[in-house]
Length: 377
Image (cartoon, rainbow, N blue to C red; front, side):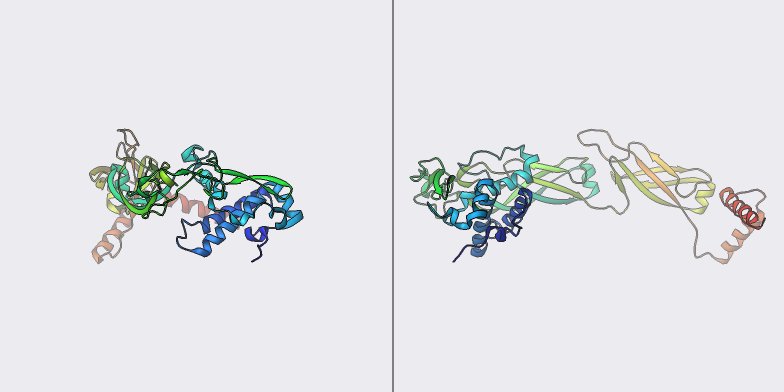
């Protein structure tokens, strides 16, 4: 079967920039990677095809040769299609460098040979605002891969040590004449590992790892905020053939609360106040984020939107014994469903007023009257 055009494989134009090529490759490599499509032969073929295309087009010299001679430029000395996943191992590793570079500090980057460190894993966890305030210890179950218990991660039956690859003599790279160029690529026999396994472990198939769900204990510190990341070193995917495992990163999401709104270390709470309490003053009791209660004095003439501050009643500060503040936002409630007697009393109140008890209302309508008078002048 004839090979597809490399630009068509990546879904880009022939004048695509290096960045466009890389973006297209990342998207397709993530889509068809074997770890995401276990047992899917079509996805495996597409993954090889995508890697082969990117391996050529990302190199300026190879790309120039391909643009001029097509696939014929690489037919001498063995076709690129005979390579395994390891021949393009650097490409997919680059994706994880970019995705987890801020976590790993570039530690993933290295030479093209040797077993690859396990992938980092992301776990999303939802917690309540109370749990963010007080902290919590919990248990999570994470699907992933672990070191094979049968071969202890070696990949060989009985835990035997892998042998030096006879093709590359342990270097993991071979050179081949392709068209006008001498190209160094990953060894097609050991896929860049430098070692081969003659008798693979029957339980892991030579990979040195098995799929298994892990149960882990996680401690959430008090004072965490939305988007906080917690790193569990070595709890990610197991590495191939005894390589170090990746890390597990827990991303926290704090669920909305029915009473409180958080603003950093402070907590806000809207509290409805009766008209009589707002007018005459009084005291109300409000809940606090720690499960307690606090008394708030309401002065006479309190208006909707007035705020009252309770110091030290807010959120716990991360890695500190201090706390933020709590702010009460008063909302004066107009009474509804009045009895006839209540209506009579309110009318008496209105008629009995001998001074301006609603200054804002009076001021507003005075300005309205002046506005209308100005229009008639």
